[in-house]
Amino acid sequence: MQVIELNGSETITVIHSLLEQAVPPPYSVSTQARRADETTGESAGVASDEVLLYVPKGCEALENNSLNLTLLRRWADNLALHLAVVIEHRETRKLAREAGLLVVHSVEQAQRNGIRYLDRRRRRHQGLPPRPISTILQARPARPSGVQAGHSSRRIAITVVASISLLASFFAVVFFLIPSATVTLVPRGEPVEASMEISAVAGLSGVSYETGQIPARTVSVEREGSDRMATTGRTEVPDGYAEGNVVFANKTNTGITIAKGTVVRTSTGNNVRFFTVADAVLPGDRYATVRVGILAAEPGPRGNVSPLSINTIEGELAAQAEVLNDARTTGGSVRRMGVVDSADAVALRARLMKRLQEEAYSEITSGLAQTDFVAPESLALSVLDERFDHKVGDMADELGLAMKVKVTGLAVDTAYGRILLLSLLEQRASSGYCLVEDSAVFGVAEQLAASPESARFNLAVRATVAPVIDPQNAGRSITGKTIADAQQHLMQQFRLAKTPEIDLLNSPLGRLPWWSQRIRVIVSAK
Image 1 (tube, rainbow, N blue to C red):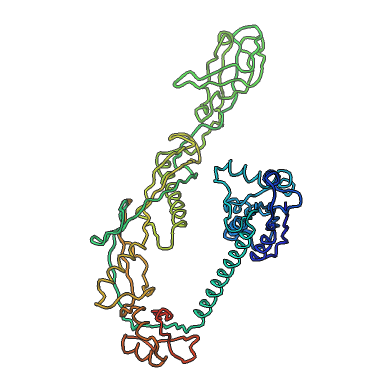
Image 2: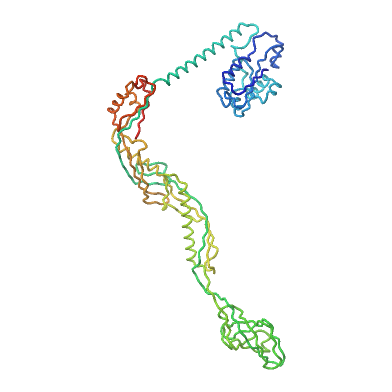
């Protein structure tokens, strides 16, 4: 097995020469020797036709070059060589397999198994036909003259290919050296204007030139947010507890202990209850007295009672003693608190919905193309979820709301409207005139009305129309002329805004090419 190791700088021609040098000379061997050659790839004293090509990274001739890899495989077949390649570059290995080359992992693998065996196994595995055998270069032991004829044919083929390459190079040089010209024509333009009211309709499949309608699409976003506001409802609630003193009088001759928390109350109207705030001892003499502090059982001004109104003791103590307040109780008060009103919920909901709609509109418009717009009147908001932190009637100074909404709108692409306007201008153009490319200047779309299903807007345009000029006919009409004659002819044939500009190359005689394909005519608006 012969190993050819490239350094990466070889051209495809050099690689071809290296393969030619690897072709073994003609020889005659016995059947036993040929059988040994078929199984091992070598026989004693005979050069092997198994060639291993080592391709390093950076090989300019083969790396990522499917064409040269295919040529390499064909050359190996024509030279009757059993060729395998070791390629360092991964992508090139893939291209080599696609080109039909036998790709092995290493030199050791090829030496250990033999290239012929690896190639036969690859072809059986992939269902490929047997390896083609060259009838030109295949050595025949009994006919050495055939080998010479094969080498002669190969030299003839190489000579023919070289001659064709030289001839193609000659024609390429001649092609690039013959005269060429670039002619720029600026037709005399006339300004035109147009405007129309256009309707954009959701679900329309295309532009309707008859009705002046264009398609529109529905866009939507979801937004979440929360807000709080002070409640407007107010109410008074009990706040401070009334307090004062009562006098207990003993109705017996036995001492009485009055425990803390003894309940006394008024006895007329809506009774107000009080608790004693300390323990007291009533002496054991009839009509003996003791003064004890009291506190109202409930907050608020109801506990502020007049003197002599607390006269009842609750419990067993009522049979042993009497009670009476000799002064007014004081301290019972109220305070004002906020209350959630139904109007508060409505106002907070409306404010949050408006804010979320504005945020959604900003998000929608930020993702639109330059020619698109969404009419604010087309926006529709639907509430997906909402949660108040208080119910109507709850006492609270603030009301909070969390909400999730979906906002949809009608997106209009004015580019469709521009198509309508350009069509209108083309219809208004005189016979033999057409719109000058890139001359149209469109105004800003003036929105008239909108809904979630449709939108109406007004659009205006200014453009230039100019005579129609066929570049091919113009080029054919000035072949072989001088620059001055060509300019004069073009000015007479077409309505031009200025003298044509002509750039001439590779023309020793100063004439335009006789071949019109070498004349490039550009029709410009400027």
